[in-house]
Length: 479
Image (cartoon, rainbow, N blue to C red):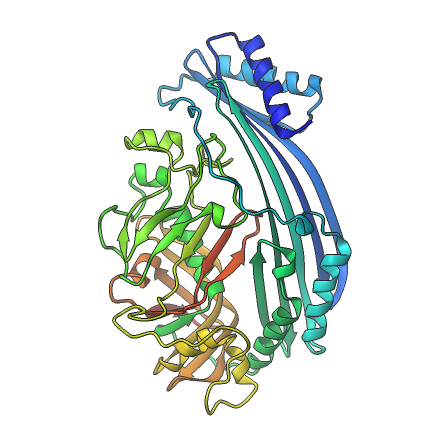
């Protein structure tokens, strides 16, 4: 049976067992995930899973309960309905119940690529082989994955929708003399991933990262590569544009206020790629501008958080929204325009993307630190500062001001007079992300965005490289 057939069966059981006073919504999702892992430059694991999950939420006599199951036989579905019904009868009263999504049209799912949906181990292995070969003998590790999701939603208000999506991603690392270099990509089609290009990029960064020097803590101008910018977007999503945190007064966001630099425009766009056309409550998803030229335009909501602030759901209910709150999970930082200002009043002159940039006067192997011409253009206009590949182990110190502490990894380099001169040992930082992106703080954005895969399929962050006036490094390798 299709996902929509299963959803219809659940709703029939709810009507029969709960009676006319019950309100219910059900999502049936089918996920087919496949992963090829490699380490020591050889594939060591190939796994795949296919699972169907049924999630049911019921509101009865002013009380709400939810549950899920993976058994889709008639007996299994009946057991799920009976279990949720029993839980609803004993649950505390829920005066904030926002009601059900009424029948509403949704946009079509993103373009479906059958070749990716049907990809097998050999298809992923070919990309791994290309990555390993391009690394030129360096030790490599990483993964290549494909993900297929199909879902259907139905509720007792008569609303039914369905959709499907597919995604491919690759993330790899190369190591040279204790230095690591990484490269990753996320795409709508497996055919759009270039294992050889990713392998060359990771290897070039590893070779350029050997024999690093240690720099003292302090504030440095930085160029953040897209992988590092992705951490900014992820934390802004979880803590800044989260409608539950906003309703509780725990978000920095003030809609209508120019809190960020005019160069910053953030759009959450699930249907750009790998997103379903509706959320867990059946609300249609769409592109939503959260920041427009530095001015906060919106935060995201599910039905419950929207009701708290007197607004409407933006289609961001997910499995964790009742606990963690609704978050934008497909956030894109718009790149610099082809002409005009690219941030901070400076004129952007970034060249075309593609290939490792040759920075004038810079000897190999440090040229490999700069992954592409777009990033090279930003580096060339930085008198002195740091080029940062990646941020990790980031933790929130103050949710309201979004002060984050974390570490650099996979390559940091000193830039002097627009040229990369030395590899630098990893640094700890403590920085307010809104401050780092505040008015006057964003000097320049790249013109090309790169989509970064997340540990969960269907979640991604897309951004260009970013040149910032200041980043607060609070500790070096020695402490």
